[in-house]
Image (tube, rainbow, N blue to C red; front, top):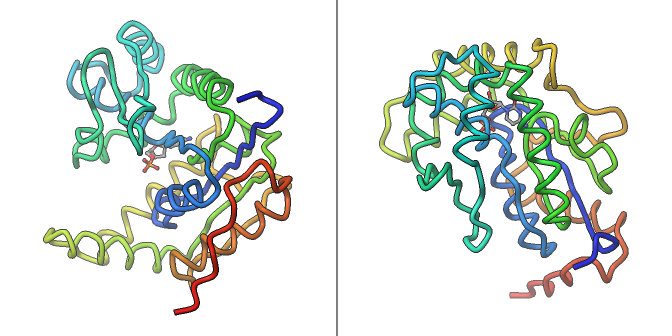
Length: 240
Ligand code: DC
Protein backbone atom coordinates (compact mmCIF):
# COMPACT_ATOMS: atom_id res chain seq x y z
CA UNK A 1 0.00 0.00 0.00
CA UNK A 2 1.61 3.27 -1.05
CA UNK A 3 1.45 6.33 1.15
CA UNK A 4 -0.27 8.09 -1.78
CA UNK A 5 -3.27 5.86 -1.04
CA UNK A 6 -3.12 6.75 2.67
CA UNK A 7 -6.22 7.94 4.44
CA UNK A 8 -5.79 9.22 7.99
CA UNK A 9 -8.90 10.17 9.98
CA UNK A 10 -8.38 11.66 13.44
CA UNK A 11 -10.86 11.42 16.28
CA UNK A 12 -10.30 13.48 19.39
CA UNK A 13 -12.45 14.41 22.35
CA UNK A 14 -13.01 13.79 26.03
CA UNK A 15 -13.84 10.48 27.71
CA UNK A 16 -17.41 9.25 27.43
CA UNK A 17 -18.19 10.52 23.94
CA UNK A 18 -18.12 6.99 22.52
CA UNK A 19 -14.92 7.74 20.60
CA UNK A 20 -13.46 4.24 20.78
CA UNK A 21 -16.63 2.51 19.62
CA UNK A 22 -17.15 5.12 16.91
CA UNK A 23 -13.54 4.84 15.70
CA UNK A 24 -13.76 1.07 15.53
CA UNK A 25 -17.08 0.97 13.64
CA UNK A 26 -16.09 3.78 11.29
CA UNK A 27 -12.80 2.07 10.46
CA UNK A 28 -14.60 -1.20 9.68
CA UNK A 29 -17.01 0.54 7.33
CA UNK A 30 -14.26 2.42 5.51
CA UNK A 31 -11.71 -0.41 5.37
CA UNK A 32 -9.17 1.34 7.63
CA UNK A 33 -7.11 0.22 10.66
CA UNK A 34 -7.56 1.73 14.15
CA UNK A 35 -4.97 3.26 16.46
CA UNK A 36 -6.02 3.66 20.12
CA UNK A 37 -3.48 6.16 21.44
CA UNK A 38 -5.03 6.21 24.91
CA UNK A 39 -3.86 2.61 25.21
CA UNK A 40 -0.26 3.80 24.84
CA UNK A 41 -0.62 6.28 27.73
CA UNK A 42 -2.30 3.51 29.72
CA UNK A 43 0.72 1.27 29.07
CA UNK A 44 2.93 3.98 30.55
CA UNK A 45 0.65 4.06 33.60
CA UNK A 46 1.10 0.28 33.96
CA UNK A 47 4.89 0.76 33.86
CA UNK A 48 4.56 3.35 36.62
CA UNK A 49 2.42 1.10 38.83
CA UNK A 50 4.02 -2.30 38.17
CA UNK A 51 7.65 -1.18 38.00
CA UNK A 52 7.53 1.58 40.61
CA UNK A 53 8.47 4.42 38.24
CA UNK A 54 7.03 7.70 39.60
CA UNK A 55 3.99 8.80 37.56
CA UNK A 56 5.39 12.32 37.21
CA UNK A 57 8.79 11.21 35.92
CA UNK A 58 8.10 11.38 32.18
CA UNK A 59 11.77 10.93 31.25
CA UNK A 60 12.07 7.68 33.18
CA UNK A 61 8.75 6.39 31.86
CA UNK A 62 9.76 7.16 28.25
CA UNK A 63 13.12 5.44 28.82
CA UNK A 64 11.51 2.29 30.25
CA UNK A 65 9.07 2.10 27.34
CA UNK A 66 11.90 2.53 24.82
CA UNK A 67 13.93 -0.21 26.55
CA UNK A 68 11.07 -2.68 26.76
CA UNK A 69 9.52 -1.82 23.37
CA UNK A 70 5.87 -0.83 23.05
CA UNK A 71 4.10 -2.27 20.01
CA UNK A 72 0.72 -3.25 18.67
CA UNK A 73 0.12 -6.69 17.18
CA UNK A 74 -1.59 -5.63 13.97
CA UNK A 75 -2.47 -9.20 13.03
CA UNK A 76 -5.26 -9.05 15.65
CA UNK A 77 -8.45 -7.03 15.22
CA UNK A 78 -8.47 -4.85 17.24
CA UNK A 79 -4.66 -4.90 17.64
CA UNK A 80 -3.34 -6.17 20.97
CA UNK A 81 -0.89 -4.02 22.92
CA UNK A 82 2.48 -5.53 23.82
CA UNK A 83 5.19 -4.19 26.10
CA UNK A 84 8.27 -6.29 25.63
CA UNK A 85 6.89 -9.82 25.71
CA UNK A 86 3.95 -8.90 27.93
CA UNK A 87 0.41 -8.53 26.55
CA UNK A 88 -1.12 -5.51 28.33
CA UNK A 89 -4.43 -5.45 26.45
CA UNK A 90 -6.55 -6.30 29.51
CA UNK A 91 -4.26 -4.89 32.22
CA UNK A 92 -4.54 -1.32 30.84
CA UNK A 93 -8.30 -1.26 31.61
CA UNK A 94 -7.86 -1.98 35.35
CA UNK A 95 -9.13 0.57 37.87
CA UNK A 96 -5.67 1.40 39.25
CA UNK A 97 -4.60 2.43 35.73
CA UNK A 98 -7.56 4.83 35.40
CA UNK A 99 -6.35 6.62 38.53
CA UNK A 100 -2.73 7.12 37.43
CA UNK A 101 -3.07 7.65 33.68
CA UNK A 102 -4.07 11.32 33.60
CA UNK A 103 -0.97 12.24 35.67
CA UNK A 104 1.23 10.16 33.36
CA UNK A 105 -0.36 11.77 30.27
CA UNK A 106 0.66 15.26 31.48
CA UNK A 107 4.40 14.49 31.30
CA UNK A 108 5.97 16.28 28.33
CA UNK A 109 8.94 13.91 27.74
CA UNK A 110 6.60 10.93 27.64
CA UNK A 111 4.19 12.73 25.31
CA UNK A 112 7.06 13.58 22.94
CA UNK A 113 8.11 9.92 22.79
CA UNK A 114 4.58 8.65 22.22
CA UNK A 115 3.82 11.29 19.59
CA UNK A 116 6.93 10.14 17.68
CA UNK A 117 5.80 6.52 18.03
CA UNK A 118 2.31 7.42 16.76
CA UNK A 119 3.75 9.18 13.69
CA UNK A 120 5.91 6.12 12.97
CA UNK A 121 2.79 3.94 13.20
CA UNK A 122 1.07 6.35 10.79
CA UNK A 123 3.91 5.85 8.27
CA UNK A 124 3.74 2.06 8.57
CA UNK A 125 -0.10 2.00 8.63
CA UNK A 126 -1.17 4.97 6.51
CA UNK A 127 -4.82 3.89 6.30
CA UNK A 128 -5.87 4.71 9.83
CA UNK A 129 -8.58 6.01 12.10
CA UNK A 130 -6.55 7.33 15.01
CA UNK A 131 -8.23 8.14 18.28
CA UNK A 132 -7.05 10.21 21.22
CA UNK A 133 -6.87 13.74 22.57
CA UNK A 134 -4.29 15.38 20.29
CA UNK A 135 -4.38 13.41 17.05
CA UNK A 136 -5.83 16.15 14.86
CA UNK A 137 -4.12 19.03 16.68
CA UNK A 138 -0.57 17.73 17.21
CA UNK A 139 0.11 14.31 15.70
CA UNK A 140 -1.64 14.29 12.31
CA UNK A 141 -2.67 17.89 11.54
CA UNK A 142 -2.59 17.05 7.81
CA UNK A 143 -5.18 14.24 8.13
CA UNK A 144 -7.85 14.17 5.46
CA UNK A 145 -10.66 14.35 8.03
CA UNK A 146 -10.33 15.54 11.59
CA UNK A 147 -13.19 15.11 14.06
CA UNK A 148 -13.72 16.29 17.61
CA UNK A 149 -16.45 14.34 19.39
CA UNK A 150 -18.08 16.05 22.33
CA UNK A 151 -21.04 15.53 24.67
CA UNK A 152 -22.37 17.25 27.78
CA UNK A 153 -20.60 15.97 30.94
CA UNK A 154 -23.96 14.84 32.36
CA UNK A 155 -24.63 12.72 29.26
CA UNK A 156 -21.15 11.22 29.39
CA UNK A 157 -21.56 10.40 33.09
CA UNK A 158 -24.92 8.74 32.42
CA UNK A 159 -23.43 6.63 29.61
CA UNK A 160 -20.57 5.57 31.85
CA UNK A 161 -22.89 4.62 34.72
CA UNK A 162 -25.05 2.54 32.32
CA UNK A 163 -21.94 0.82 30.98
CA UNK A 164 -20.64 0.01 34.48
CA UNK A 165 -24.03 -1.29 35.66
CA UNK A 166 -24.39 -3.44 32.52
CA UNK A 167 -21.07 -5.01 33.52
CA UNK A 168 -22.49 -5.72 37.00
CA UNK A 169 -20.30 -3.04 38.63
CA UNK A 170 -21.74 -0.59 41.19
CA UNK A 171 -21.81 3.00 39.95
CA UNK A 172 -22.71 6.27 41.65
CA UNK A 173 -23.79 8.94 39.13
CA UNK A 174 -22.56 11.94 41.16
CA UNK A 175 -19.13 10.37 41.76
CA UNK A 176 -18.77 9.43 38.08
CA UNK A 177 -19.75 12.96 37.01
CA UNK A 178 -17.19 14.49 39.39
CA UNK A 179 -14.47 12.14 38.08
CA UNK A 180 -15.28 13.08 34.47
CA UNK A 181 -15.15 16.79 35.28
CA UNK A 182 -11.81 16.38 37.07
CA UNK A 183 -10.32 14.39 34.21
CA UNK A 184 -11.55 16.94 31.64
CA UNK A 185 -9.92 19.67 33.68
CA UNK A 186 -6.58 17.82 33.82
CA UNK A 187 -6.71 17.04 30.09
CA UNK A 188 -7.67 20.60 29.11
CA UNK A 189 -5.15 22.43 31.29
CA UNK A 190 -1.93 20.51 30.60
CA UNK A 191 0.53 22.66 28.71
CA UNK A 192 1.58 19.93 26.29
CA UNK A 193 -1.00 18.50 23.86
CA UNK A 194 -4.04 19.80 25.78
CA UNK A 195 -7.49 18.49 24.91
CA UNK A 196 -8.82 21.04 22.40
CA UNK A 197 -10.97 20.99 19.32
CA UNK A 198 -8.24 21.39 16.67
CA UNK A 199 -8.55 24.43 14.45
CA UNK A 200 -10.31 23.38 11.26
CA UNK A 201 -11.55 20.12 12.81
CA UNK A 202 -15.21 19.15 12.62
CA UNK A 203 -16.92 19.22 16.00
CA UNK A 204 -19.68 16.67 16.45
CA UNK A 205 -21.91 16.86 19.54
CA UNK A 206 -23.00 13.29 20.28
CA UNK A 207 -25.24 14.18 23.27
CA UNK A 208 -28.47 13.50 21.37
CA UNK A 209 -27.20 10.85 18.94
CA UNK A 210 -26.91 7.07 19.09
CA UNK A 211 -23.64 5.36 18.29
CA UNK A 212 -24.90 4.36 14.84
CA UNK A 213 -26.11 7.88 14.09
CA UNK A 214 -22.63 9.24 14.89
CA UNK A 215 -20.93 6.62 12.72
CA UNK A 216 -23.36 7.27 9.84
CA UNK A 217 -22.64 10.99 9.98
CA UNK A 218 -18.85 10.62 10.12
CA UNK A 219 -18.87 8.02 7.35
CA UNK A 220 -20.83 10.42 5.15
CA UNK A 221 -18.35 13.22 5.85
CA UNK A 222 -15.23 11.08 5.21
CA UNK A 223 -16.67 9.72 1.96
CA UNK A 224 -17.37 13.29 0.84
CA UNK A 225 -13.69 14.21 1.46
CA UNK A 226 -11.86 11.15 0.06
CA UNK A 227 -11.69 9.75 -3.51
CA UNK A 228 -14.07 6.83 -3.76
CA UNK A 229 -11.42 4.23 -4.73
CA UNK A 230 -9.46 4.73 -1.51
CA UNK A 231 -12.21 3.43 0.78
CA UNK A 232 -14.14 0.21 1.19
CA UNK A 233 -17.40 0.37 -0.76
CA UNK A 234 -20.46 1.62 1.15
CA UNK A 235 -22.68 -1.05 2.71
CA UNK A 236 -25.71 -2.09 0.69
CA UNK A 237 -28.77 -0.18 1.89
CA UNK A 238 -30.80 -2.38 4.26
CA UNK A 239 -34.35 -2.76 2.93
CA UNK A 240 -35.79 -5.28 5.40
O1 DC B 1 -8.95 7.44 25.92
P1 DC B 1 -8.38 6.82 27.22
O2 DC B 1 -9.32 6.94 28.38
O3 DC B 1 -7.90 5.44 27.02
O4 DC B 1 -7.11 7.72 27.56
C1 DC B 1 -6.33 7.47 28.70
C2 DC B 1 -5.67 8.76 29.18
O5 DC B 1 -4.66 9.17 28.24
C3 DC B 1 -6.59 9.95 29.40
O6 DC B 1 -6.19 10.60 30.60
C4 DC B 1 -6.29 10.86 28.25
C5 DC B 1 -4.87 10.51 27.86
N1 DC B 1 -4.60 10.62 26.43
C6 DC B 1 -3.85 11.66 26.00
O7 DC B 1 -3.46 12.51 26.80
N2 DC B 1 -3.53 11.77 24.68
C7 DC B 1 -3.95 10.87 23.80
N3 DC B 1 -3.63 11.00 22.51
C8 DC B 1 -4.74 9.78 24.23
C9 DC B 1 -5.07 9.69 25.57
